[in-house]
Image (cartoon, one colour):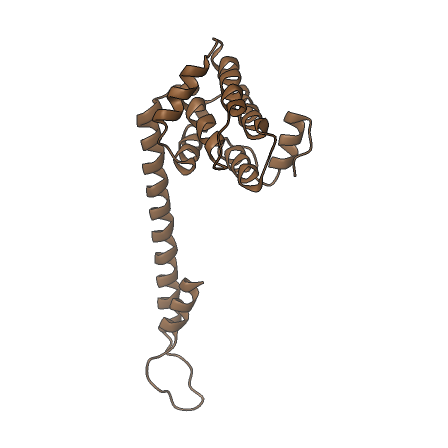
Length: 190
């Protein structure tokens, strides 16, 4: 909205014009140019910040899907501001499914102690690496997220929004995310 106001101000002459005259002929193209530059700059800054976030996550987890999944699940458990034993057990079970080897509760608790990545950083990394992960890995991650989100007996708006963000980040259509999640979980998600 601010960009449109700025463009309108540029297109409007700063001096009083005689009655019947409009803005000078060169002001409309200048306003359009300013608008294009502003939008291009905003997109460039947004891409730069997303890249910084993704690189921070890559530095923490490398290219390991299991390492990334553990960070995501720990963040998911903490997203509602409460972490309980059932969520930690759900993470251990999900990581055993993802990694193929049993993951013990002390390993999950250690991950909680060293977790430092935000949801935005984790989502940016997932967007960057979505092509490197198989569809099965993506679905497995979404199932694991859901199991952690509902482990405490609640599924609030913050958790729902995070699940939709991760669903979109893996490359599934954000608008169709609820339908995809319903088919994957065979439950009621709206």
